[in-house]
Length: 483
Image (cartoon, rainbow, N blue to C red; front, side):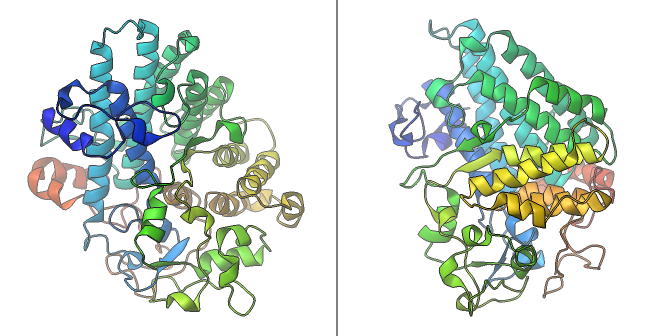
């Protein structure tokens, strides 16, 4: 495992425990095998936040696929060419090598640590919190690819892991969450990672809330097929306590200097490039609703003839001819988000609309919008809700559109919701989708194809997985994507 530690230790300033300054997290890089488990946990936690936050076309194209943004000069990704830059391989590696591997190693080191300060109860809480990060990571992976290496994935020396059926993974993820919740509920006062936890700063009760919210999220995402006992799982999650306010948001707040800045700052500012503009898909949707959040989502100084103007999806869009992304999310300190109160409220609204929970869908819907307005520092939520009231007759569109707006910048969340609810209406890319048979019913890819390396280095297992999911194509729907 020494090679893994050496790779991890090359990240400047991330190894150690902190609440204020990542750069204080230093360790003796001459003795990498003695690194503390807490340090590896912090590093992996940041890598996970980086991956879900990034808009790098080498790693994360979900903000493009759901048409929050489109490209200016290089339009490959907006036309669904994910192979030119080997995006599937980079994303696959980021989750397995940069998140799952160090999380597993952190667990081993913590369990072997006999320090007086690490009581058995504290150790148990730390391991359970690591487990929740792994569940979150695997949920992303299975929603991106379908069947993925799962039970075999913990052995870093196994270069040919078998793939596990996505339905089996979904079921096991719920079990793993339940097991973690049981542990965390035993003695939350024992503490956990303290300052090495870059999200909840060691609060066990916050992680219990996170666990129940993640359980809700997983259950909702497969609600059209119900391979889980959806109603039971959701009721358990609510009873256990999901995010109750924005104070429970799972946020990793970045710092003002590299390499500890939000990757959006790196992609949009430090790069010195002008690669993205908002799409007319997003701008026109918000304009049709007289959405006051437009001044927060887009740079007010970039209006064209007094109005915001979105770029044409998949086209070459001259940067100066269209409106620009808000300066707010370009700030180095802008937080990475794993799950938010607003997101949870829209899941509850959907659960209510599906008859799975008590409580009015309208109330959850209103709360989700209100929380979004508050997050972006925009007034007028009550008037906006009156003008854009919940529509029970067309609840999928009503919830999907407002969830889409509330999850702005959170591309993978919006991508999952789009595939499940089939709203908002997306544009056909100008380039017609170079690697996808684009039709009126198939405007957006339904998954990533498997990495090229898997096709060559893990050929037998890759071929079995490709066959099992229905063909290794971008238009192949995952098991839960039925409409």
